[in-house]
Image (tube, rainbow, N blue to C red; front, side, top):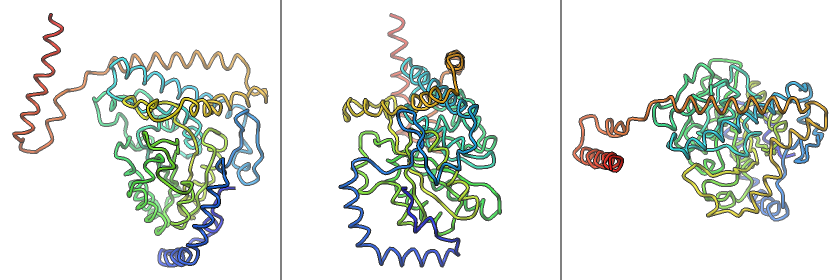
Length: 404
């Protein structure tokens, strides 16, 4: 079990009392913790994590987390599978549209469907979600129309939905800043006495940002009802996780005084169970939790990235064997919870979604190429004027070529 038991069992205290106790523990255990970390790192070829479904689709018992999925029905299991399939189909269509010049950029979630659908389905309607720019599956769970995600990547809006309609904040491009937004919002929720929780998504690369460390500090000291959900997909663009941390990411929570859990990010049931536990903990006044979903980005960081330059094909192939969608399908088939008719119907629904996305994007207006120059300075600037003129000449050169 990958929970820091000393932090998990900490009762709710005042901010001053909690801060003093945390500091005392850190001072007395620093040498022991450092030695333990080195030993664990050397001995553990595979990370310790919470898993309820093996890559082969076999159910694994877990006394601590089984109760959070004990009542799940076959219909709900099929729903989780449908969510992952349709999210992957939407993601593939968006990638293709970018390659066709319809989008300026796209950040794919390929391989991370279980982490997003499992955690997304664990939230309640009154919970508030703060995403990065890759949480397409979470957006789906929150009821955001997938076509609304594409306007920003086409350059025609700054986010195509009202965050308060679905309690799903706009995508955040600045790495890690949404964890501070989530912490502040959660502190407000606590002051309001609301029975709800906040969840913030970020990647392993963002875990190296100062914003994330500051959000950990504030959330711990103020006992904020927030879950930090880190999708560790192994690569921060071209930087591997081992170049960012000497210990597993979930263990960082211990130093801030709250529990951390590492979950199999390709296991939708485990992600659902662990996130439910963390959110219930937040709602009951026990403060923040760090969930590290250990998963893998099977595609590029974004469509401007070429992962073949920094990682081996063998690595991707090893993770493809742990595919989150195939894993759940195997379980559904072995448990006789789904038949070929279900899968065929879902395939048709998937293709229909792809067509709807294509039509919606192609119906969008072309972006205003010169809008980027309009609001740099309130009163204008000679250098910006010069850059605008150069860009205008560049754009005009295409018209000359087309007229030849």
